[in-house]
Each structure stands twice: as C-alpha cells, then as structure tokens.
Amino acid sequence: MRHRMFRLLVAVMCLAMIAGCSRTKQLNRISFVTAIGLDKGDTGVKIHALIAVPGKFSALSPAGGGGAEEKPPNYILTSEGDTIPKALYEMKRKTSRDMNFGHTRLILFSDELAKEGVEPLLDLFMRREEFQINPWVAVTKGSTKDVLQAKPEVPQSVTDYLVDTFSQSGSDSMEILPIFLYQFYSYLNEPGKTPYAMEIRTQKEGNRLRLANLGLFRKGKLVGALTPKETKYLQMVIGDRLRPATLTIRDISYTLLALRTKHDVTKEGIKLDMSIRLDLDANPAGPPMSYSEKIEQEAAIANALQKDVESLINKLQNLKTDPAGFGEKYRTAQGGDLDAGEWVESIFPKLPVQVKVTVRIDRKGMLS
Image 1 (cartoon, helix red, strand yellow):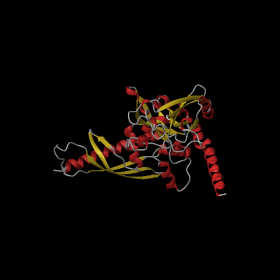
Image 2 (tube, rainbow, N blue to C red):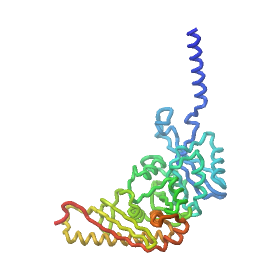
Image 3 (tube, helix red, strand yellow):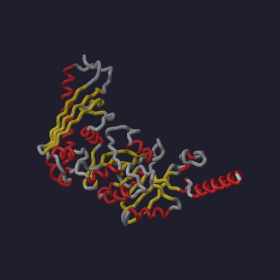
Image 4 (cartoon, rainbow, N blue to C red):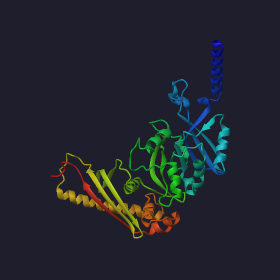
C-alpha cells in the first residue's frame, strides 16, 4: 500500500512538472524590446523597436554566452500605422516571437514628431500594462532609427549606453538633465512645471552618439532648446543636487564645490539668491593669488553668473516654458490653484527677474 502511494505521488509530481514546462516560454521565442523609437511616417507614425539578442548576453544565452561576441547585440524591427496600436499590431505580425516590452528602458521621439506634439502618443505607454512607466524619454535630431543603430564603444548596446548616461552612473554631469516617462507625462498635466528631454545626435565619424541640447516643451510640443552651458545653469537654478561641474568664466576654469539656491516667486517677480563656492582650477606652479585679487575675481564671477542666469530665465520666459518649476513656487506663494495655461502664457513671461549671486573662491595655499 505504501509503495502504491509513493508511485502515485511520483506520477502526480511528474505530471505537474510536465504541465508547468508546457506553459514556459523559451528565451529564443521571446523578443525583448529594450528601446522604442518613434518617427513621423507617411500614414501616421513609424515605430522602430530595438530588440536584444539573448545569445549575446551570458545571462540569457543557452550556451552560457559562448561565441556571443561574434553577433551584434541587437536588431531592429520597424512598422508603420496611422496610430501606435496599429503600428504595434503590424510589428507583431512581422515576427513569430512574442514581443516583451517589460524591459523597455528608452523611448525616443524624432524632433520632427516632437514639434507636432507627443502628448497623444504618450497616453498609450502610460495606460497599457505591457509597458513600464519608468523608461527614459529623449528626442533625436533626425530619425530615431539612426540613433538606435549607432555603435557605442562601451557598452556595445545603445540602450545600455544611454541608460548608463541618463542614470548618472556613467557620465555624471550637470550638462545632462534626464527625465523618466512618468515625470514627462506628469509635467504635461501639472501647472507648476513644463517637460523637457535631452537631445541625442549621431556623429558621422564612427557612427557614435552625442548628447547635445536640452529640448523644451510647451503643451506637449518641442518649442526650443537649451545649450549644454544653459542646461548647467538650469540645474544650478533648480538646485536639487550638486554634480561635478566646471565653470569657465573670463577664460578661467573653476570647479564647483558647493551651491545653495533660494527662490522667491510672487506677483512682484522672481527673486533668485545663489551662493556658490568655487575651486580655482589653475596651474599650482603659478604665482599665488593675493587677497585683493581674490575679492576682485569673486566679484567679476558673481557679475558674470548673474547676467548668464538672468539671460537663461528670460529665454525660458520668451519660450513660455518652465522646466525650473517656478510655477509650483508661485502657486504655493499664492496659497491656491494655478492654471497651467495661464501661468506659461501670461503670468510667467511678464514677471521681472532679479538674480543675486554670491561667490567664494576656496583653495588652501593660494593666497600670498
């Protein structure tokens, strides 16, 4: 009796294992989409899906990754439709594999498409459960496909390269201001801040990638851009986190050591108080700076930074974009609600701007 029960138990376990295996998808039957590019198409929108090759990565390769270096890490599927759902449906018909979007880390919009407006396109990515809400969003100069098929040196995958850069684990710079999909979508619908996205370009030499300007959006449309220097100043205005930065003022380079930014946004105007501590990035073998020279240099730097920051805010006002979030501080100061359209269209552009900058040059042994 005990032997029969044992054999029955073994049979049931085997059946359960067989049934479980029958529902398991093999890796070579799944297309893992790591990045999506959207271009303007002839009939609507054109979608490019960057798909990872499992055999290229040791964690996904059935053979432990052997010989993977001989294969490209990705391939691209392209389809077109008058809407994104139709384009995705056509894409799924082109492959015999199940498409998995759970690993999508990057969504790119061509500048041509972004100028027409991205808000209707984002709605699908936010609603469908097959997509995550935390991929990075960026804009490309030209077709997104050119960026997706670029070949960065390290790492080989375009997605990994850009994710490393945007997550600040690779290039930690104040000239790069990344944004997640859910943040971009939130800023579209909130009155206190307008969305932005880094612009990615391809370089003809070696088909490499370069992060250039910061694209600015109003009502979901790309309306302008900030240069890398202006993006650095924008991050200083926001004042959330200090990242490694070098400031070149009057042909002299300084390393940013500390930063404190205080905002006051009311009906009377925008008042910005910035306190900055710098390290003189000069040749240590040169003659030391006297105290009077130090005071003169600090005043000159403060004056130059004041003009640059005021010019930046005036540019944002002219473009009617608010990536710094002045609107949220204005709403808080008024103690009530704020209409997003009214803020960027009529209130923000007319507010006077006053910037005060205090600079201290800090370096041991530099004074005579």
